Length: 165
Image 1 (cartoon, helix red, strand yellow):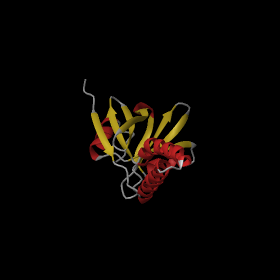
Image 2 (image 1 turned 180 degrees about the horizontal axis):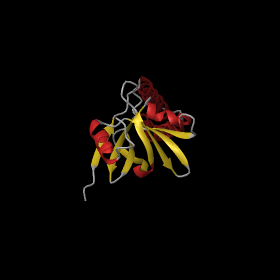
Image 3 (image 1 turned 90 degrees about the vertical axis):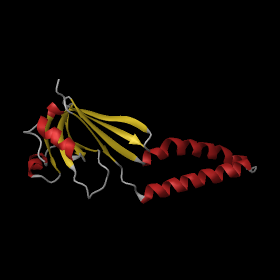
Image 4 (image 1 turned 30 degrees about the horizontal axis):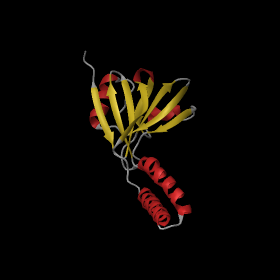
């Protein structure tokens, strides 16, 4: 079988706000735990709670996306803090209507159509973003992506009438 297999990693954009949130959360946690250990026991329990919040929530500030195109499917995974991987979405590309650069005239016919917007990009506006309109269940989705050249070529080869580069 001659299936095309392409992976593409979209690194997340590092925002200064995320760094400030991390520093502030760690500082508050440290102050609460130190205060709790120094004898103010009322601060120890909030310190433990903040420690759990830091452990579970702060990794979500750093998100990368991995696109995997294989056998007519596009699988998108979220990677939190370069450690934890979660499956975000799986699209059957046979249900795709169009795949074109953002702002392309091919997308004009979908401007007044009710779609659900899904963003799997780094958030960096200087990079070229592509829009995929696809049927997913009962609704249409407008999916924002940042594929690489190799993935664009593979998509174009597999779906020449639907993909515009």
